[in-house]
Amino acid sequence: MIIDPDTEELLRAAVRNNAAWCAAVSGGGSFAADAWTSARRTPPYYPDGVTLTREASADALLAGMDTDSPGCSVKDSFAALDLAPAGFEVLFGAEWIHRPAGAPAPGPSALTWTRAADAGELAAWEAAWGGGESSGLFRPGLLTEEIAFFAGRSADGRIAAGAAANGTDGVVGLSNVFTADGTPDGEAWAGALGAVADLWPGLPVVGYEAGDDLDTAVRHGFTPLGPLRVWLHTA
Image (tube, rainbow, N blue to C red; front, top):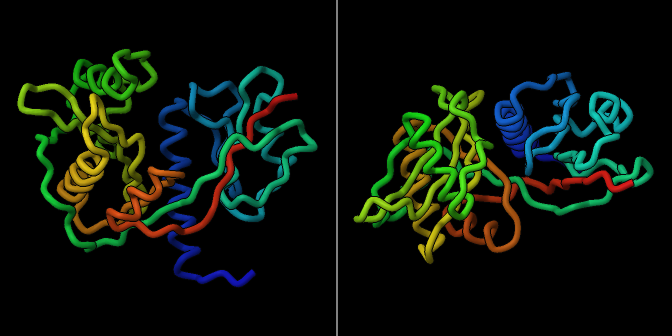
């Protein structure tokens, strides 16, 4: 397989950024040269391990995780592992994406975008993201300089769209892009990208998406970088 060096550099930056986000939400874990792992069960929707290189060893990765309790999962960042012999099945596949620094600004959003500044605003953001409930998945401790939760509000103050972002090593990761109550997806992407550009000017934006969300990201200036897989332990 021929690997373009520039694409590979961006891909690795996207992978490390996402691993940092997973570590922050999970409240810890350990970074090694080839992977991030958590020895304790991570929160819902978040993996127990993330590979950081194509050369990551399945055995070394699994040794750093709790594979005995239900729900153990792995983000195979380069779609390079075969974890079936260890009792895992592929849960879903997706594509890493990249939007270059200096890309044309998205069109104006009809919403007013702000950054969550305290625990109450974060809880309101999570309630909108979760369809009306705040489970406490996103802790107030995540309100740091490197992490932002953006809310797009309608004229009546209701959160109609939102996204999370984290900055690491010269890139910004965009994730958890959502809309509520019939708000068009384009409003979320345009508004979130504008908020990211205001907070982290001049930096490329990375992340991963699949299906219709991937198509929407591409329409907003993103380019696919390469595949990933998420494996779930089922045996």
